[in-house]
Length: 312
Image (cartoon, rainbow, N blue to C red; front, side, top):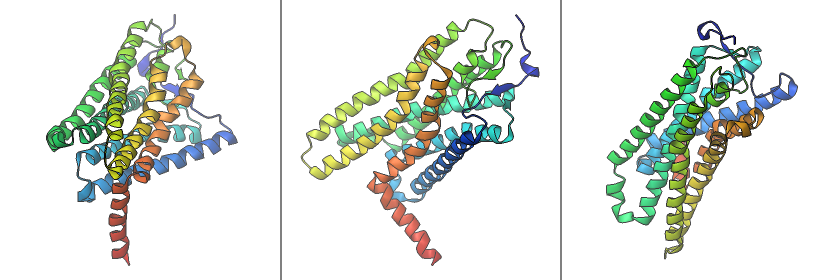
């Protein structure tokens, strides 16, 4: 069987859209979504940084989520747009490795961060008296560092493996970014051991955190229904439903994609599902959190109101 030398041959990304007018219109739509994500997440980071009222664990974690979403969408969309507009579909082995590393780092880190945010709400609503101790600034910092570190280590292992396996004949990746499972389809060797590793790491970084989040919000909703204060009940329910919306949008397509055997997956379906967690979720997160959160809306009024009044 002919093997291609990895150092002398680039990969080819087949992309998401056909090279025609329909594809161009869809790309313009994706570019608009990308712009919204950049503005929305940058605004959230700026608001949380400059408004002292948002210097709490919940919003510090939220600012990290916005940073991850910014990096997440920037890992895939610019390269996809460049390839479509230039007509060049190639990506170097190094470029593929860098893209895969950042994508997988954000994927794992965001999964763990969402679990940390769920724990924060669980303690705030179910154990409010213990909140200052259980969710201190130091604990919040440990959660953030832990999410980034574990996500990076996991990503490095997967990326290193993907770049060291031999590839045969075609180097055309049927995806719009260097997604490791899509790359495995081109391998010369049996990759069942690695596919088992993907199953294990997906379970550790996505499935178990998702189950933990579901359990904690179940406990939170139980506590909310037993609250005496109608105002407190409404605020807690709004916060939790916001988090659950974000969590579902992120985890559901991810878990569905990576926990299925390769024999049951199709490249077209994988690409459509990937649009949800790589492009739509980073755009939706700041919108969901800002429109359904009085503190964030209040911060917008204070910060941008002050900015507007100083300009006039």
